[in-house]
Every structure is written in C-alpha cells, then in structure tokens.
Length: 304
Image (tube, rainbow, N blue to C red; front, top):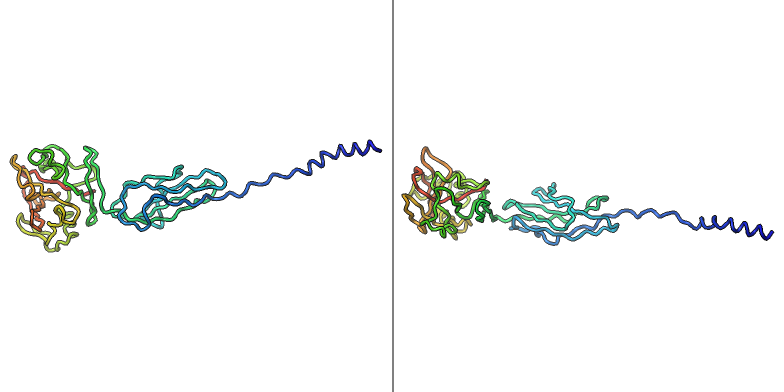
C-alpha cells in the first residue's frame, strides 16, 4: 500500500506542473505616435516670410517603439495641402523656391506604419514681396520685387554679353548702374526665366504707382506723363525698384550718368522701338520711340 501512494505521487507531478503554466498574453494594442510640434517654422499668420527657410519639428515618441517617419505638407489651398516630402526619417526640411507675395499653409504629420498619421497644427504665412535671383552664368545676384502682380529685378542687368558696355569702359560702374546694351545684343543677354518688359507691362507698373489712365499712352521724348511715378521709380523713391540714372553710349561716347537713364522696352511701333526715360529732379516717366541706331542703354527685366 505504501509503494502505491508513492508511485501515484510521482505520476501526478507533471500534471500539477502543467496546471501552473499560463497562456502567453497578447501584445498590447498598438498606439499612435505623439503629435509633432514645430520648433523652427514661420509663425501662424506671419507676413513677409522669406521664400526659402528651414523647418524643424519635435521628435514624435511611439509607445510601442515602432519607427516613426514624417510627411511634410505645403501648399496654397488650406483644404488640400500638397505633400512635398514623404517618409522622412529626420525632423528637418529645407523649403525653397516659394513665390513672392503668396499665402501658404504648412503642416507635418508623424506615422509609425500601423496607425493613421497624427498631424501638427497648420501654420498659415505669407511670403515677402522681395526676394533674389542668381544668374547662373556669372553668379550675379539681383534683388527682386513683386509689384503690380509682376516680379521685377531691382537692379539693371550687368551680364557681359556682346555689344554691351560698362559706362566709361570701367567695369567698376556695373554694380551700381548695370551695363549698357545695343538693341542687337538684348535678346542674347537675358537669362532664362526672365524677359524684357513690354510696353503694356510698363503701363501695369506705372498704373500700380498711380499714373492716371489718360497719361499711359502719351508718346513723346519730352512729353510729361503721370504725376510722381518717375520719382517713385528712381533710387530711394519708394517703389523698391531704385532705377539708377545710368546714362547711355552712342558713337563710342558715354553721356548723362547721374543725370538720366534710358531703358529698352520689348515693343515696337513700325521700325521704331519703345523706351522709357527717367531724368533727375523730374517726376515724369517719359515714353517714346526711336530707331535702334547704335545707342546702348539699360536693361531691366521681368520674370516670365
């Protein structure tokens, strides 16, 4: 009898051991990453933002230690912001090439590959009316200005092309005055993405600066136009375009620097070509036509 109970106890041990084992617990429910927050970005409602800037945001924490990635959205429609970068593994991005004077909306979202992405706040901002353009041909940097719905260069062109001249053949004048171009060399001097403004584009600028409609079509070398639009266009005049009085070249002779300037216009009347003329201490913007001749005068450009 004694041996029977001992044997029974031995056979019972594995059974009792099995009862102590517990089934494996299921994984806890996957959780979404934390909401990212902007660290470096335009303020909401900001006006005058640069057209290129760096965006940074906080690292999103995932409770399940799943790897987190980020999508960046930037666009002009608040209801349908466009994705500009996807599956980023870093918390920064360089925004560039934005348009001047334009309202944008910006947000960043984080996701762990399992859950629906969680998004930051949406930032609304408006870019500045001023920017810059670098001519890749020679590295010259020009300021740009949005005015009247057009983007103008803020300096005269100074690209050294055929039949273009530095005033007095002194290249030191180029930075302040730009170069002087014969009509035959104009098209070959213009960088991609820009053009010589037409007569109508000049009129849009002049209208924006307050020129009466009845004055726009006045055509004559010495016939005044407008009120104070010439003053506004010259250096320090408030338009932001700061036209210097760059003078001209004709017959190999340079004349009129710091007294007046002439600018080619991409419009013709018969065989004559339109120009604009600004004169020191004169508030008018003169509009006239002449044959091209051998005159070399200034170029100011508008963005395509």
